[in-house]
Each structure stands twice: as structure tokens, then as C-alpha cells.
Image (cartoon, rainbow, N blue to C red):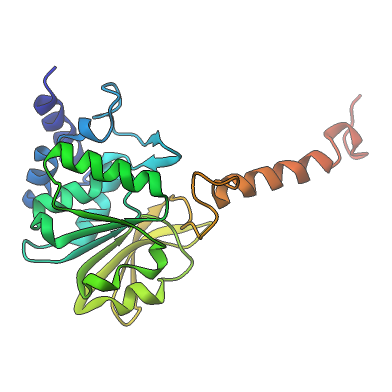
Length: 243
């Protein structure tokens, strides 16, 4: 089946009342235009509504992209920063809404930066700037931003990102750790929570996919497993009546 047909089917499903992830015509048109197969090379996965693992990062499911960008509500004249460029798909959708030269993206993992640059160029969005840096510091060289999208969870909005917002700007991010919600944050730090979500935590230096400790989630999983291995097993609890 042709990719354009698969794109239309994908967006139709996101607009259906059963999901309702995409509501605006602007976002609908943008997602119908971006060739997702350039960012998710596995043809079976490109238009499936589920996340995809690539180079040590999770490519967001289309419904999650829709939720984030509806909350972000970018305009045609907005300058936009994406923190957590990943493979570049979200930045490409934003480049369809705003001018590609007004969209910047950063990622802490260098090989993802190279991947995003190549994918964006192949998809026709080579004008989108992608840089390698600590996302919590943003990209002050191009500030202020009308919109900032953070694609990783944090306990609180990073101060540097709030400082880089225009006076009427907004930051959209997964807020929280154990219990997360997509939040729209004002330059003053006031947050409006829109609904639950589950994102990997924002990485800090030393936790890139190319380091020994890939990220906090994997590290925490390992530590929890080690602690669980030292706990007593079911047959060791005297309150269990095995007879």
C-alpha cells in the first residue's frame, strides 16, 4: 500500500472519536504531509500507532505526538524548540506547521543528532537545525521561543527552558516521575495538567544511549531486580499455608 494512503489512514484513526488525539485541521494536514517512513524505516512499523525503538531511544507513537502537539498549539509564525530530537519526526511535523527555519531541536545523544539530521534532510526538512547539547539547558542562541516541547519527563520544568520562552510562550512537557501528566507550562512556571502519560525521564550527561548506563529507567530496573533477588521468596514466608 502506498505510504500516502497509510498516512491518511493513520491520521483518520487519530481523529476518530475513539482516540481524539488530533483535533485541529492544521495538525491533521501536517501529519498527512510528513513521510513517516523516512523516520521509521521498518515499513511494518512506520504507520502503526505504537512506539518504536531506534538507536537506544523510543520513537513516540503517533497518538502521543498528536496529544503533545495539540497541547503545544504552534502557529505558522512561531519559533519552536524541540528538546529530545530523537529521530526527528516531531520536528518535521512542527516544520509543516511553522517555517522549517524557525524550528530547532536538541538531543543529548550525538548519534541521534546525526540520525535526526539525516532523516529530516531525506524527508525534505533539512532547514530544521538539530544540535547536540544538554536539553535542560535549551538552545539560548535562538531564544526566545514561542513554543518549547520537551519529550522527556521531569519533576519540574527546567528553569533554563522557562527563561527561553517568549512572554506569551508555552512549554509542553510530561510532568512528574511515577505519575506523569502532559502539562502546559507558562513562562512563570504555572502548569495546567491535561492527562496522564508515560515517558522516559530526561537524561543527564553520562546517561546517553552510547554510555554504559543507558538511562535512569534501565538502571533503576536493574537495581530493583537486584533488591528483589535478595528478598525472601514465597516459600520462605511462614504465613503461607502450603498444605
